Image (cartoon, rainbow, N blue to C red):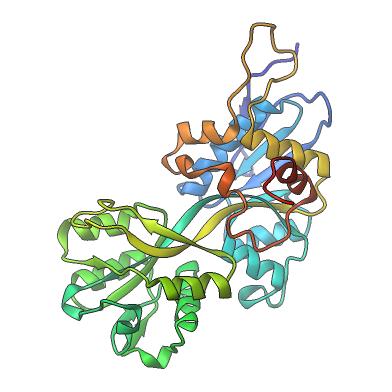
Length: 337
């Protein structure tokens, strides 16, 4: 008998995730979503998304797996081993254009499904360093994030857009968020770039025990960044997000995006995109049964970052081609002409 219940299977050999399946009426297709590490936001969101999709589209076998680095995950899309993954808009653009870490392995078959939520570039400063504008970073000790990481990419792009160069700084440190926080706390650095969702746990912890400020970007610089790098969006950190932050802080951010292989059938991606944003009535539903809420709403019930998912921002910072199935849906909704 057909059922809407989702069966969760824990692979004992691979130990790479869990599989959510349901019988299929139309396609009988299989579809994999590779996320980030099992303890991270991407995996939590991917799990919620797969559960919602499996209910809305019981004809598609949905598999969720925690992922590795973006280079590895997108390499699996390139080779046809998986259908889709979560990546930042910056990384998706680099992969498609074959730049930076993708120079030797461009992912020409990557296509967009949706932008999900923004990760803000948050620049933490010590008030004693007197950093009031981006240009004031010149001559200072600045932490740019880990080498080849998303934060260092953001920092480098912003520096170029501002007409600055690494030699303009007193010293550059390449450290992750935990070490960056320690350096700021111990007055060993003047500023640190931190790219993450809002609120950032690292920034919250710093605010609780250290006198810091969050540097706002001037409108002209934000405009230059977003015009030069279409994978960034203008955004604001709302007032009172952090202790003693009484005013909004203007900055830029990259979008967490759901991308897939160009080879995935158009109709399947259309149905997945539709299920993400629209209510769905599963096959064999009783006459008194109500439509299921869209997957985006059910993600919001499951995870705090889910509240940022919205159809009107689904194409924000989409700097790679859309999959034809997703493009068809957004044209129907009037988001594309």
